Amino acid sequence: MAVLAVSQVGWIRVEDKTILSMGPRTVTHSPRFLVTLENAKTAKNQSQSREEEEEEATSRLHIRQLREADRGCYMCQLNTEPMLSQLGCVDVLVPPDILSTGTSEGEVSVLEGENATLSCNASGRPSPRVLWRREKSGFILMRGLHDPLIPDIHTRRDFIVDNQSGEKLELTRVDRRQMGAYLCIARNEVPPAVSKRVYLRVNFPPSAKVSNQLLGSPLDTDVSLVCLIEAYPKTINLWTRKEQVIMSGGRYEIDERGHPDEEWKTTSELKIRRLEKTDLGEYTCSASSSMGKAEATLRVYEIERATPPTRATSASWKKLSKGKSKFAQVTTINRVFHQMSTPAMQKSTSRIIYSKHMTTSTTVDPRAPFIKDKNVFKNRENPNLRNCADVKIGTRLCAFSLLFFLILR
View 1 (cartoon, rainbow, N blue to C red):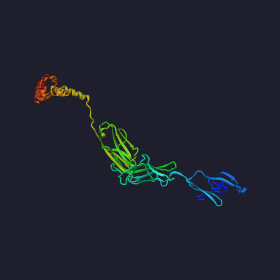
View 2: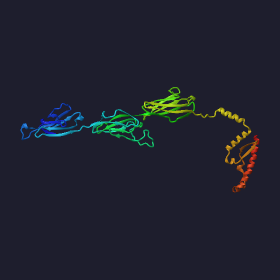
View 3: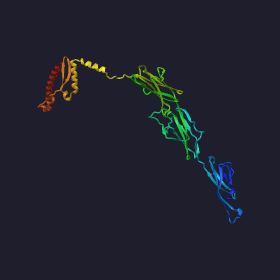
View 4: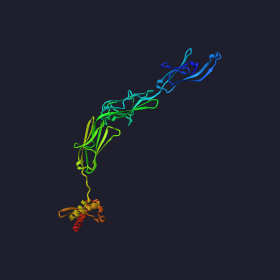
């Protein structure tokens, strides 16, 4: 600003009436405040004497390392008659910050079925906006007031949201699916945004279950017994048989692995190598924690293994075939002919009765394709004549088959 009589210029902080400078000299003891004069020159008015020369300059108030407490209005004042003044105000923007007071600790623990409240108290100018997000999935599971703790897929009324705004995150009747890390994120127009991590622990008694209560396997094969355990806090898991604890070693191996996303889930697997008769029976999977104990049982039984025919069996069958009677050989030949026969050949099948045994013989009639019957078309028109022809052919084939049988004998 342009002023008259530079020696009479003063800077005052309006909020607490603190005098910062008088003329070119700084009064306050804070080194962060500085006053400078710019474009100072002397001008003489014709109606004034030398002693009344005018002095023109611009006075500037500089504030270094601006703080939030410096926010407010400042007055440039001229000690003249009448007094002249000009007011200037400063607004200090502050990046967001999460305060320790009014903010949840790094870990919040509740029982399953209770309500949980996560708080995040943030400061900044302008006032920051607070958002809540899940650390891994990015989604927050919100449940209805009357939802069951372990919901049925067909009746569940809970829903998932990307984020929840507000300094408080209210979770109604929490269950194990809501366990995990939540991020409180505060941001405003001034970067950078800040966040705080709050971990929600949901405690509940253990449960144990097996997918199959009966497990069948042939002997001398590897068997795996799998048990799914859900609990928090973590449980001590054991495999027992006949009240004896099974330890890893020898033919037994126990493997435990946690779920990557749902830390309350643990899979315990008992592997038995080369199953033996003594391994058959009932096995128990148990899980114990400060919240309680759970057990699940399954039974291992033997499955008979199907054995393929060996060479000894084939040799015995050949020896047995050599001792067959001629009647059995004829029957075998007849079966071969029957498998090779066509529908036309199967029409020439006759029944042979010999020595109180009955068998069926299928033979090839080479004359069938070459029969020249003048009445063939008439037989088609008259079914009775066709049947008579079939009877004559059958009689001839019967005689031929009997002759063939006597020759083989």
